[in-house]
Image (cartoon, rainbow, N blue to C red; front, side, top):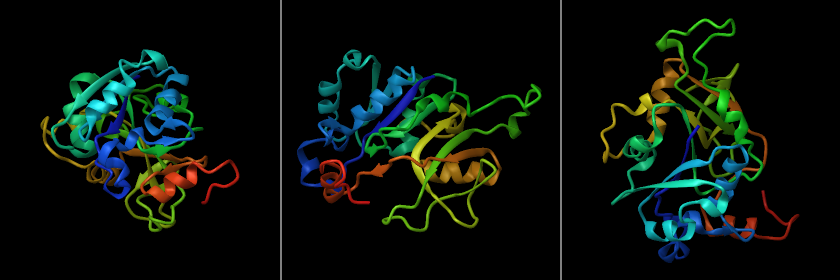
Length: 238
C-alpha cells in the first residue's frame, strides 16, 4: 500500500511562523510534524509515500530528501498553487497507482495512530468470500475523533462502521482515510477540489466506512496549539 501526505497548505493562522517555514515542517517535541507521520507509516511497513506541496515546497524536499534516512521512498507532487485535498490527489494519481491508498494531513499530530490497520479496511468481498458488486463496495474508510473545541458540531455520524452525513453525536473527521483511486476520476489534474464534498457524496450512497480513533490527536492550527504541544509532558492543554 502507498500513502499520501498533504503538505500544500499555506497555514495562514500560523503566521508569522509559516511566512518562512512550511507548516508541516514546524516542530513538535524536536521533530517536524510531517516526520512524525512518515515514521508512523514506515513502522507499519508503508514506505512508498507521496507528498504534495505548494507554499515553500522546496524546503520540504530539501529537508526530507528522498526519504532514505527515514526508511521511506518519498515522491513529490508540486503544485503551483494549492489544489486542496481532492485536487492534490487527482494531480498525484500517476504516483499513487490503482490500488487503495492511505492519505493523511501533514499538520496533524497523532503519534500513536497504528497504520497497520489501514491495510485491510477496504474489502472487495463479503464475509463469506463472495465478490461485492462495485456499487456495494466501500470506496473510502475514514477515522473520526472526538470533537475538538474549535469544531464542536463535528462532520459525520457513525453507526456500525458506516459513515453518514447526518445523525446524532456527529464526530470530527481526523484527516486520516483510505481511498480507492477511482473516487477521483472526475477531477482533472490541476483542478482545485476539496475532499469533504466527495466524501459526503459517497456517504449518501452508503459507500464510506469508518471508525473512531481515541488516541492522542491534535490538528495543529494555531501558534498557541503548537506551543502547548511543546510544553513538557503533563503540561499539554486539552
